[in-house]
Amino acid sequence: MKYTTAPHVAKKLIKRIKLKKSKEYKSVKSSLSIDAESWGDAYTHKDEYVAKMNFDPLFLFQRYGSEAKRILGLLAQDTDLSGFVSLDPPVLAAEIAHAVRQEMAVSLGDIVFRRTGMGSAARPKPESLRAAADVLTSELGWDEQTKDKEIQEVLARYSPLEGIGDA
Image 1 (tube, helix red, strand yellow):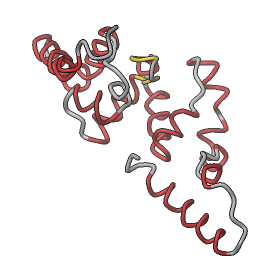
Image 2 (image 1 turned 135 degrees about the vertical axis):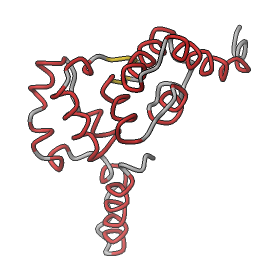
Image 3 (image 1 turned 180 degrees about the horizontal axis):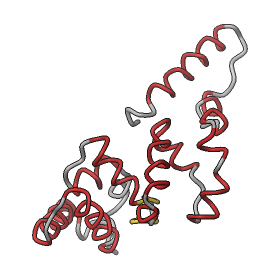
């Protein structure tokens, strides 16, 4: 669980515990789901995001909680950040810019392994790593050598796993 969503989830969990004690318990899973209306204006304009940028911002609210508003703000300021650097899982360039500007991310490994879900299930595609590194290059002023080094460091973390699961 990310720190940005933890307070919201904790408050809902406490409510659920209180309801359980009063015999009005409902499914914890349903009580912890994102209630889009609770995010106010940012989510009520979702149709605009769908029309302009071809995605529903609900995944941002699910992933970042109240911090999603900041990411949507970045998208409003700079449409160059509206592109996806990864589709599986979906990761916007704006998420990477947000991680650098608000969460002090300074490496590609930090983005891949901690700030996004890019590296959680499998090694990201090379084009996704390069696209993420391009955003970091823009945000942090990297040169090509630094960008290539960062990509190689991420790929090296997967090398012990090569061959596992091959038929």
